[in-house]
Length: 451
Image (cartoon, rainbow, N blue to C red; front, side, top):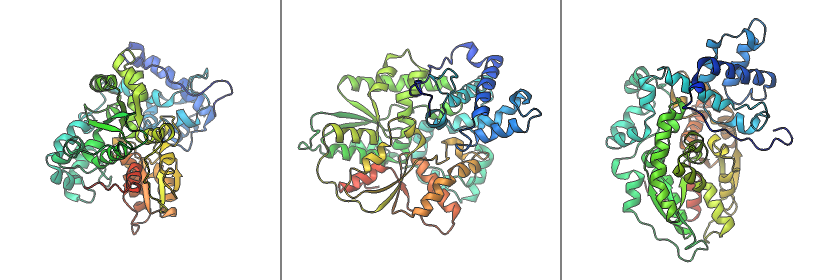
């Protein structure tokens, strides 16, 4: 891994407002500097499609070196990066504090920021990534939206392919009706807090609903809230806005910064009242904890929120270790294929979802720690969907081999993509619907979340 004495990988503040950050000459020099190190190392050849594209590009060049590669040919390398951070976190021996200072994902981000500034991000790319607005609108016409976006609907999916560049076969998340979005269900369905639990009176939590948790998978938030209540923890569900991860994908750091400042300003008063913050999806937790402080480092609310934020499984494990869990977890001998999402791993907290599920008696968990390949909106786009399936094939193949009772992933998009990958391998396969691991934990407590 990292060279002896260099320490764990660290990241620098992103100077995205400085002119040199997107200066074409400066950027090209930095691309070539880091690409040359990658070319000489090649440890990341099997992580995603960016590195094979880069190495093939260099190998096919006249000199077999980077000096004979035209800069315009770098674009496909950048396009293939999903910003999963796995090269930076798990593979690269030259990540900072190493003197080579290699941060491939943030280099790809820098390229995209420059493209955004040059007007190369399309209207459609911007609009499909407004997940907060899109989810809110779709919730009012959820039946129609789900019919129109369902894979297999040749009529509407061909239109989406032509207008929005969405691959006709890519599975898209379904929406719940407006009355059933998470913040509304939580408001009208109170839960009793267990005063006899070991953690009772010691903790309070704000559940940051996230776009996915609010509009697509409210059961994740409801299960988390119920598990917390069983363990004596009071919670409130809030959704001040999107975390900005979809905008990060296209290099719109001004939008990410605005989201960070807005959400942080709404959540910090709760921190002042003694609440911890738990984000329901790993991509959003990653943004709150790590990306926001690098993009808006001078905002005190952003800095405070980062220190108070947790992932779902991370927080349950913290309760178990610090306070102890409430009694009542029933055995779960059924087999579970647990996918650890890239953005969970990028939080550098260990495999907390596996740790959480193994708190259940007789848990039978097989951990899968390779990338699912979906990459957010990236993986649904026409040019990327086949690549997303290819990158995720090892995970899908392993799930098919295991044939588990349950498929679980902390990332809802990753879970669905894995299930689709299994069906791509065998059209006759009938894998179970993927669930967030907190759903299995709630089930072990006898908690069933009604649709």
